[in-house]
Image 1 (cartoon, rainbow, N blue to C red):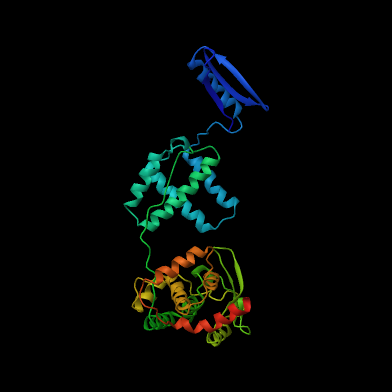
Image 2 (cartoon, helix red, strand yellow):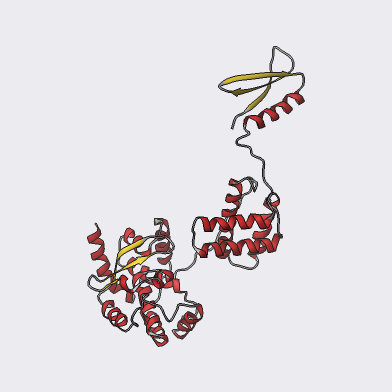
Length: 343
């Protein structure tokens, strides 16, 4: 930004302004301070015309539509666009269809306070993240003021679930009572640490029976692990399961889909009514932690994009009680061998 300075001289009356233009210093004298400051503002706008663009006031409908279109242009996940759409819908329900120039700090604060009455801290922080992304986008395009600040609320750390042997076995029994598909689904979640959506995307051709591994594709991080290790005890189960699949089926888990209602029945029958499917990743992680597997290996297997996420997960798990051996422990020998080969 080019500056314009207003000042007085001791040896001469009046007021002066100075600025640099085309590599040279320019000056101009005025009889009063008011005129000097007035001309300084005009000159400042002229010198920074390329930077100080006029703010554009867009109606809410156009502002929201243009922002959501960027998700399609950048080819982001549909789930991300859905979350942003839902947050903007809630924002409109609280504040009404405000124009871009009417989005002020007070409007943002009202939304956060009203939303906090209905949801918990973690859900509120997701909405705040979506609003921050929306504001940054609008500020870059001169739709929204740059003077807005939005900070996440301080949330209580979630306690990571650590299951005992009997609980894990009951869960597997309950899943098998539902179907063989669900049994394989839960078993893969416990022994590989994969996310639910990544398990659903496993293809039959991704299973390498001979090398005891599979190819995993992370939908969240968009990374591919071509040799994710599988324990030898899993191979007979997968071999029998794949052999019984209908001819032409390409997806490993294609029929009995993973829905919240089905999972609720399975976990309730196992005596774990509050267990989330994502908690099965912590069962796998707990087994690695108990055997002091290097943090870099744990990060790679859990497909964390940041080492900080893995360290935080380990730290929270250490507070849940003494280290327990789970049925996932028998994967460790294979994991250590894979780690040694990767060095």
